[in-house]
Length: 442
Image (cartoon, rainbow, N blue to C red; front, side, top):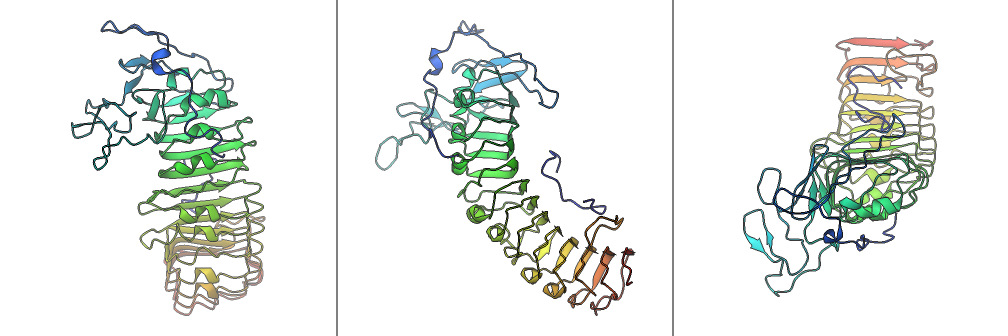
């Protein structure tokens, strides 16, 4: 589908748009101090390692090579610095109070703490056991591909950039990321035929974006259920269920589910929460999806004007789940052959764009009785309609748009039964353009 100029819907394939098998205790047996020594500028000894391997395909992006880390000295490899979390990039101390019992940590306010409970004096058990005395921060992006060594990442708890994992990287390689708790950028796992679960990420708590793509063997993502902050979630060409996330507030702003062969409902989203003023939801090419009511919680915030794009959902019989939407940045509902009415949209009052196409069972727009204004309103394919684009085969008029008063562009495309533009009594005209394409009765 080609949207009219100004549309914001995106295909989740484009970047611009597992049970807890081993649990948090899954860690490498080698502690940080057991690694080879490296030579430091202050007489500290150590070694630096780099994979140096080139990707096997031009489709796999390259990133900083995996370099050695040390708990007491800063290591620089290919321009990427890995530092202890007791010193941030600005030189200010960061909180390390989740360190192992018996250690003294420097907090963000400059004070020291042993991590003991003030009321009982007891030391709390760390959320994710680690073999390292202190967690390390990997500065910048990190790319891991088949054949790369991750032995030097065992103490890393935070990555300040993106973590990109491409190709058939196995569990034995990813196990060294078991202490990872935070990814400031995107965690992207793609084109992997081996992974059946994501146990090495059971300690992950915060990530700006999570993309799981082309992972045909992945069947279990429950290791992600400890996530407390998640901005973007994208899944395509992957048959795994959705993780049940209970982090409050989660802060989701983008949800993209594309080409999922077996997902039948969105019930796992019931506890997910949105963040900010925008929320983009894309559900595309999902042959088994028969219920979207799990979106209701995400869409419940009246301060959020969501962008919604449904396309290619052949088993979806109802739009239940969209009842709370009053204002939409855009709403495109396309190729939904079982949808018979628009009643769940009864509260919708305005939209930047509202597009309805490929819903032949919809015979009336009466579910849009409160809809007042739109920049673009198109019934049937886009304004440059092409012969194969979906129309609204069941509509005969605009009946049901009782409250509509203002439309900048109105398009009626490939809708052979529409023989009148009556049915919108409050609409006196359109501001910019009226497009009637392939409508023989008109």
